[in-house]
Length: 250
Ligand SMILES: [Zn+2]
Ligand SMILES: [Zn+2]
Image (cartoon, rainbow, N blue to C red):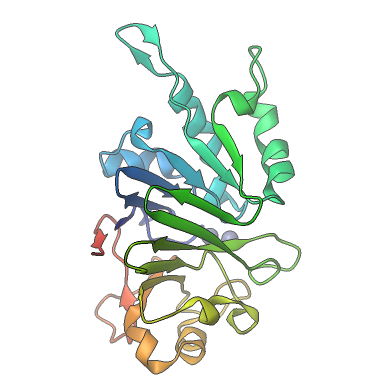
């Protein structure tokens, strides 16, 4: 599994792109979140939208979904030697997300005789899971734990043959109420954790992350979604993801 952070910044970043991830799982390529900076971050990573097989959205804040409509439009309007050959990625949806996504995408994509479902292949993860070749995806719900009244979730990606797995927390504040700890085992290779180095109401702080995860897990934590002001020279007990620098897990 290769995990490429297209961006590592928070919602208001001017220095980085939004914290969206590209994950190669065997021959399949998954995009986790599609923020408003997606068109630039894909371009910087030299990744064409047509190479992305499936998309998963953790929640509907602008830095995670603001670029989805544009992304699907650019996939659909692919021309090969002058011929229209739409690329329709699979859009993985939590059952509770279908209505939200319908409300979000309908006004921009339901025209020209098309509906948003023509731009992608919606796949409702009825039991919260999805299998892609030898990889198994599993939703980790975190509704109300990022923001009160907001549906949100993380994702666990498991390589079925080896059991090796990676956790993506999505945005979360209230770690103590989450199911994340229960998902960690000796095969967990990384926890991609949104982390804020200053106090705020919607993201876990550095201290909260250190307190939540046992000490022996700290070295598996990779911080993302941090402030533009973060100083990389600062001594940090968790890893810091760098934009455009891939993690390669065997
Ligand atoms: Zn965010
Ligand atoms: Zn958010």
